[in-house]
Amino acid sequence: MQYRKFGKLNLKVSALGFGTMRLPTVGDDSKNIDEKEAIKMIRYAIENGLNYVDTAYPYHGGNCEILTGKALKEGYRNKTYLATKLPVWLVNSKRDMDDKLNEQLKKLDTEYIDFYLFHSMNKESWGNLLKFDPLDWAENKIKEGKIGYIGFSFHDEFSVFKEMIDYYDKWTFCQIQYNYLDINFQAGTRGLKYAADKGLAVIVMEPLRGGKLARLPVLVREILEETGIERSDVEWGLQWVWNHPEVSLALSGMSTFEQVKQNIEYASRSGTNHLTKKEVEAIDKACKKFTELTPIQCTSCGYCLPCPNEVFIPQNLSIYNEAMLFGDVELARRKYSRLQGKADLCIECSQCESKCPQKLPIIDLLKQVRTEFE
Image (tube, rainbow, N blue to C red; front, side, top):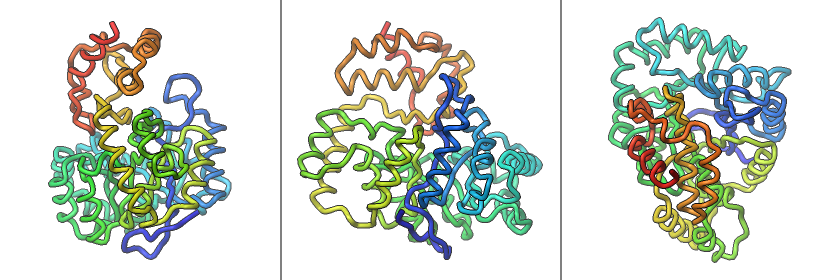
């Protein structure tokens, strides 16, 4: 495992962090985590040098923090840094912040959280949160020993990101969506460099764009293969992120034990500025081709769920993308026919659009899916 400096702090974190948003489940219900397999995966990663585990209040229908706490028993808690996040959309008072943090400490079965984030911040949620003096509150929790360091995860434009960074000079770290498709999206490369220049550690989420970069269309893969370097689609994506010296670690939402083993291997040969000019140019070219081919920029993060009318939004959009990217509309139609929560259940309430970090016009996209497959 390779290790990196964590911003201005005198500590080192593993290049690979374990994101627990996409743990294995029993059946299709995300709340039903396959406990035995998930614990095995997390512990194996820690045993092989990973020292940063990230979870959050809403992951897996609220069950993820409980599972993470179980995985970190038997001495594993002392071997890793633990991060979780305040669900800011549920905060309407300082009391709410206290209640949520105490609930999370109980679910995680721990006395303190190393890295605590304000979750999924954007202009609206940041403005609302400021009403309750969250930074003063966080500093008090640090003094009480319940939190080690405070940061935020981010989904909005660069100008909002810069405003948040500049507002508070004691930020320790931030978490941004970053991959070779998103260099100009949300915080993007400008945000990465700006935060790092301010001394913040930068954690990268969605390094594979919600798995979209783990299975590349043939026309995209061929561009990377022209380099003569043998790498899986996943490793191309991860090595591109790790190539940036401003990145402290990349979170991977691993869903299988095999993915854990592979990603640990990839991390062991990671480094900063280790890609050649030829490799970087090939990735740039592949990015352009992928963007040309992808109709819907959904990462399948699931923040749009639950839908009040039980539309499985990410699955609908994913099937549509697969049809367009891989040119097999008939296979996609068969998948769609077996899908529960089809697009035609949408009642256009727009709740999903207000929650989508990518700001997608979900209602119109579901109409597009319905037109194509029905």
